[in-house]
Image (cartoon, rainbow, N blue to C red; front, side):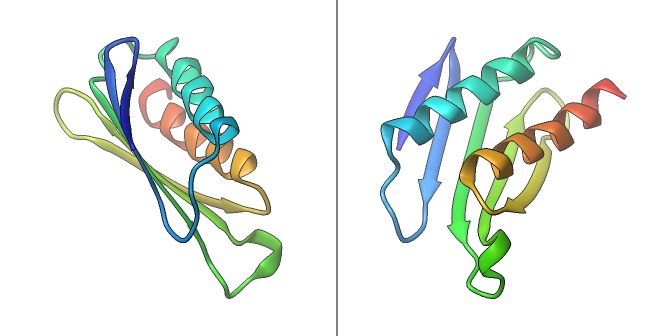
Length: 98
């Protein structure tokens, strides 16, 4: 699904399930949280999938941020989509804040 938030193009892909309005809202909130630290984000790609090997942390989120220069990427897995999304967001934030 493609849409935008504050002029930033978002591409949200889910594997094996359909995104819920709650998941879309979480994605938008996490993106807005990162926008406080970096204002030159032009695109954000989210890839949600489930890893069957470990049922306790099977929610995998891969997140790519389109920024001038080299794009940023982070991946996280957890027991919930929200935790995985937040962890990946923290990894991205550390890439351009630290």
